[in-house]
Image (cartoon, rainbow, N blue to C red; front, top):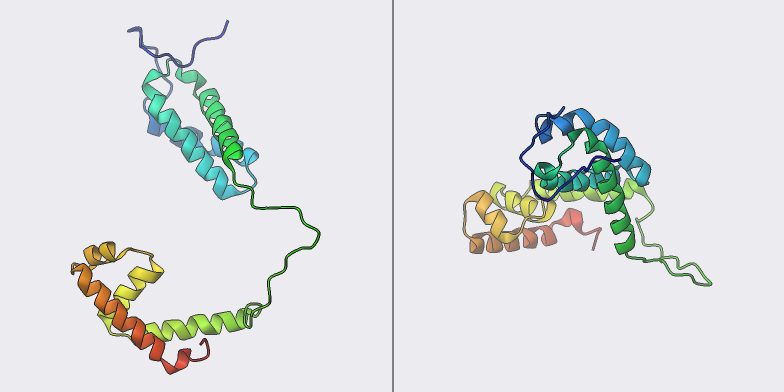
Length: 182
């Protein structure tokens, strides 16, 4: 006979747990559970995301789990169920066709040296901007913050962010070192 792992209502009896808290369980078992997640996915980053999702589900059910000795089985089942759901929901972007579509080669796309030179030129141009405009451009376009978030970080109004970024982009458009890109 198997011991129930999870029940809806507690019957008032508590069993001693080898893990006094969820955090201690995660610290103790994360490497083993991560190996299990990696066996379910091809990408290590996807495995970490999968484990995080399964641990979130386990955390939500933590109080309902009666037998904490069976936690690994519970988490493994959550890993498998989550991975199955992800697989079913995946978007298929590949279609069979007679000819392979090849993108038209763009100048500079294949040469890493040209890409690095462009990157360096862009940073030099950004570094020539005044400090306030430079901060706003970096937050908006490199850190991908919204105008509202940028305004909050810098302690200015949204209108100030909009006008300063507009002026900064105008200066970057006029920068002679970036003429090669245009």
